[in-house]
Length: 161
Ligand code: HEC
Ligand code: HEC
Figure (cartoon, protein in one colour):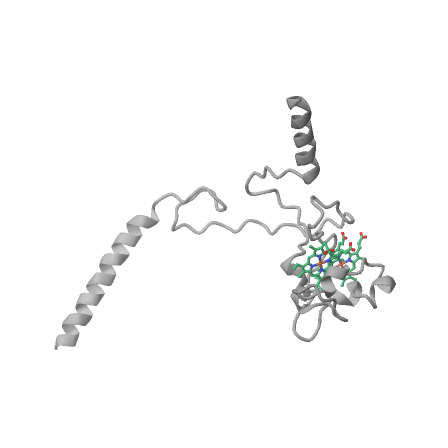
């Protein structure tokens, strides 16, 4: 009968826990990515952002930025057997596809040895390259391009003299 006592004690504890949780659920939700409502409330999901604007290649914000993807990549498979991105961006296919070839850095291993094929380090393209959507930013962003930073630094120097 000991197990019964333990089991009922556990059930009682669980119910107590649920009671506490129920009270907690009424708290208003943090006003972050999911604004408004209470913690326990299910709100309708916001609509999915529209795909890539197809606006052509974009200027880089700093020299080593992985360029953003200026086209739709929906259903482009990248797995062990196939890499859809390379059907257009590889050395052999780029010219025919009218796509920019992956740069020489993509053939280098971690020791900067140049390999014959795209390095495994660079195989999963979307680790670094991302398409753009028409979503409005969820949080503010104070990023400044390297040119803005340089111009400000030069102005400061000039002003200090
Ligand atoms: C059907 C061919 C095709 C496929 C498949 C493709 N791309 Fe592209 N990609 C292009 C073309 C063409 C451009 C140039 C677009 C332009 O100039 O407006 C481009 C541009 C880019 C650029 C911009 C390069 C720069 O210097 O601005 C990146 C990054 C890129 N693609 C990444 C990818 C990734 C990652 C994938 C796979 C998820 C992929 N692409 C699949 C054809 C393709
Ligand atoms: C580890 C991060 C990383 C991965 C993974 C990666 N790239 Fe890049 N890619 C970069 C960076 C950084 C640049 C810009 C500097 C450079 O060329 O190395 C770039 C540049 C490019 C460019 C522009 C080349 C040019 O000459 O303008 C293309 C196209 C591109 N990548 C396609 C791809 C494709 C396709 C894949 C997958 C096979 C891929 N990248 C995987 C980081 C990455």
